[in-house]
Amino acid sequence: MPRSPYDTYLYIDNFMFGRQVEKQQIMNVLLQENIPPFAPTVLPIISTNRVGKKTLVAHVCNNDRVRSHFSLILRLKGESIHKTEHGAFVPTGRTLVVLEFTSDIDDVSWQKFYSTTRRMGKGSKIIIISRIESVSRLGTIRPMHLNSLSLEEYSYLFKVLAFGSTNPDDHPRLSLVASELAVLMGGSLVVANVCADIFRKNQNLQFWQHILNKYRNFLANNFSVFCEHPKLLIERDRPVDISKLVSSTSAPLRLMPPHCEDDDSTRDLPKVRYGDLIAGSVVPPREKFELVGWESRIPPYKKYVNVAMFSGEVNVSEHVVSPCKKRIRFS
Image (cartoon, rainbow, N blue to C red; front, top):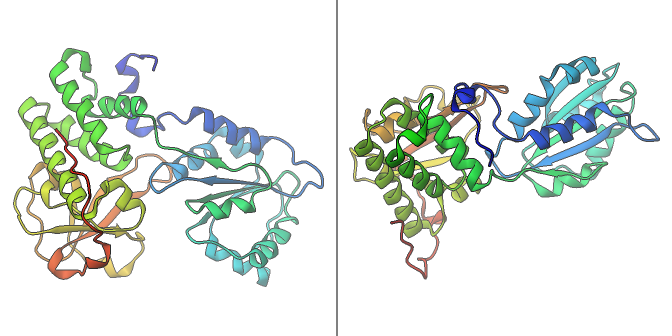
């Protein structure tokens, strides 16, 4: 990967890292004319959770050329398209519709919605965002599949975030720890931002090694209980055991699947920052609490939150799989 001066990345957490090829591909679709019969082009963008598809699309929508090309940019949840049957969706002018599907949609409902969009202005487009592969059938052009960053890209990004304005080449032992942790994190952007924030605040070798050892134990524990990497568990909406990341407890502490930020049932829960928990600067509440992983500083300004609770409060037996046949080492 080409090296760039580190001072050009001082504010990398305020901007989108990588995805330049994908960004240009999306813009090319949005700015070109629709082919006959001139119905809106539908571009599905498919990926697993927390890969950055919403951030990528938001970044494209904020581009000056895109904003000036469309008279209206609408962002809708997939569940809301049923309102079109009642005439609530009749935009005029060239329109860009960004649809997020968290579940599949039947073909009849989609065709009703799509027939309504034909009344939008010439050159209108539809972007579909989803992690559900079957939704790609709704596209009028080939879907875009977003993959995780390569290990080289991911490790580079993590070091830039962790070292800030400091050049990692000046701290080879710290850089080695960061490289080892990047491999263990498995490409998770949320965890990369959490750990990088911890490292940036305390660039001490012993502290970094302490966090690295914590993460090794965390991985080993989850492979022992669930036989899967925590990133895969989260992508499959399963709980993750984070006990080994917390210094102040030996009781099993579970990170539950992500919930909607507007979920009223979690509004009054105590809030703890994930980084503070890992760094050991806070003690987790004994009752259920909300764990704030990372708040994005670029559109769509998404907050990554999970509910955490000690295992006595939740039945996790349905998530436990048979013991692994192979012992996995992290050292």
